[in-house]
Length: 173
Image (tube, rainbow, N blue to C red; front, side):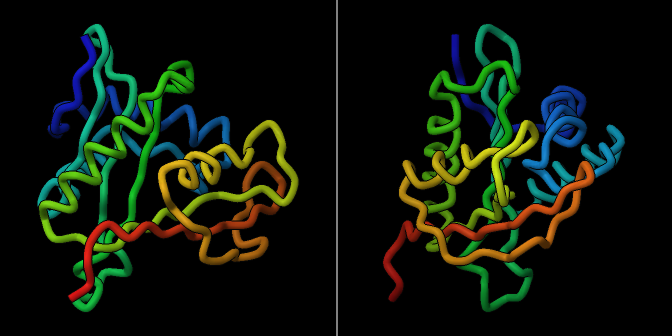
């Protein structure tokens, strides 16, 4: 049975196992060293202090997570946040991503968040470590591309661009 629930710090090892694959095998994240379990647990705790951190389970297996965090970190940006999502690499293409993001978006909207941002690795040319799948995913969910930072990430001996995408989910009054 599939369910989405709030993550807790005790989920860190399972969530880190999902994230570590992306750190070690892809340029989806520009993080080059896998965090320790304690570092990852602390990330979850910091997020939960102010934002939702959701995970998706199916048949008892944790298959992905999505969380929000501060955008830029200044008080004037308090109605905006940055989104993050990672799925078990073997569980992609099953509709879990849209389910997680929709649940997260609903929670953020209820908190008064108006703007969602996604910082996405963007290949100069698609390769085995990075495609434009994340950009396509976000576009399907209503995000629009705002801009490109050129050759700002270096991983696996290659340069990568980074793009920002935005989705407005509330009325700015």
